[in-house]
Image (tube, rainbow over all chains, first blue to last red; front, side):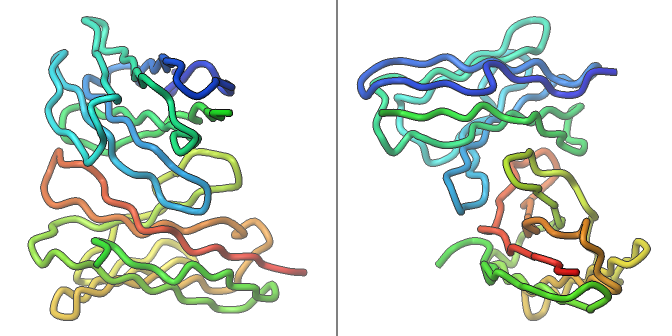
Length: 111
Length: 110
């Protein structure tokens, strides 16, 4: 059983560019959450998707947007990248309100 | 004030030592608490849930004190493989987001 998978694993982008990160949830899971983890910090909640709708959102600007597809997979989009967006982006999936399992993350570097 | 606060460490201990991590949370309405472990450049993984009655899993003991809004993790007989960052996490209600502390780094030396 594949766990949560994220792609790509690493990415380098230039300031002002846009990026799309992808997440496939653990088999049987229907809820996907995204987190940003800056170096030396704990993960910070970005938003959560359930039934293709954004159910909850953290304190992130509108440059951060997402989508969930009918197969429960999800994308995180970040527009107008800033140097401060450099971080590990983690996707977590769960079945309804159950335990969340994390993917290995996408390490984004903005130069 | 941060919602979840932890001592960032690092804690540098010899094998076999007992080490304790502490964490405080600011929202008295928070319902669920957890300790996650994160290895270098890896994803966080659930170590254990934390209950008011205290819970133990092998060498690991977690405790919640709601009156003081305080959570602890005790690791006995430390192993080299325990070296990692330990993240204190709270969740206000079922299905809610996870709120993480900054993590406490543990290094166990031979």
